[in-house]
Image (cartoon, rainbow, N blue to C red; front, side, top):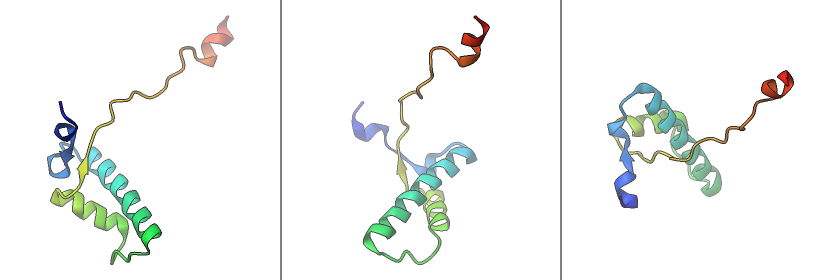
Length: 80
């Protein structure tokens, strides 16, 4: 699978939860862009990001990396 194949368009988001996650990440990106460049986006970045996500204008990709989970929990060590 090429890198281009795993990029998805926000119009294909299957659930509201995923839509909000994609829109939040887009809002962070837009906020940083605005801060660095001084560009005025003409509204609240959260509203702009959500509208773009709903229109299918946001590209996103799932991260396959699993979160780091410790092998043993402190509760298991306390029982010993």
